[in-house]
Length: 323
Image (cartoon, rainbow, N blue to C red; front, side, top):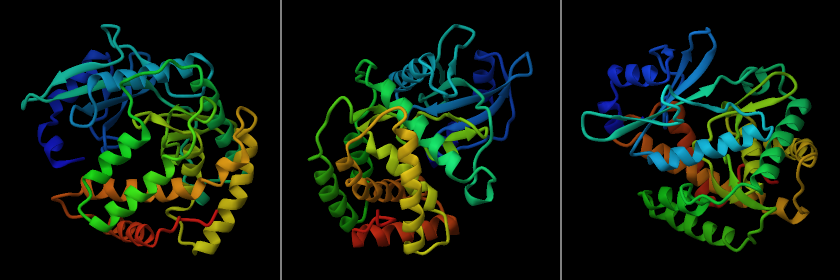
């Protein structure tokens, strides 16, 4: 979490948020990268997730738009950790911090299943990859009928926001050219829409049959192929493999992923040819995010190593895999 947000987040704010949704929370967060995430319990001993979003990250309208989209896909059969109402029947509650900024509190169901941690998980393999593709395809099929909202960004607005804060001029230049290439891709109802945008293993649980997806905080208007690119990207990002080994794995994974995806939705073959563009864009987005999050702080060694790898690929204009 950024230093300015850490300074104003207090136990009292967490206590107030829990009270508004009538839950108790564990004080140690499950996550604190872009939002504060806490495990919560209700009166019935049911598990929930309480999230607090600072106003420097999202406006109240943006959070409400995210949760309305989440509500819509949940009501139409998608396996997601849906939003729950507060005691006042709101999906989002506003809490003022001592400096005049705000935290927006939201409560979600707790996703069934467990996190899949790469190769060390017994679930890692083709059945998971097929289910992963099917879950993404279902969300893309459903979003085609979702009304347009003005309170979620386009991919271009998101990525431009990151690129504009980059201090390295070389990376800025590469980002501008790459985004220009992506903007030439056609936009259509069956290939572009509001979507999750970040369906990596940290954002879903798996029970051996189905995924339950959560954390729609990055939901934005983007090309559908982006969601498939993210699966390939995060499946190899933290592996110790060579580029050749990563590429061999990604090509096999894509075949199974696409099979699952096409149970729900189909993209023309030409879209898969654009995968390298989106893989490269994620390198830039992740690099920029790391630079921002650790500005003014010491970057841990693992993130420093990752940042150096990202920078190398960005400057060489290479994708993480040769797909």
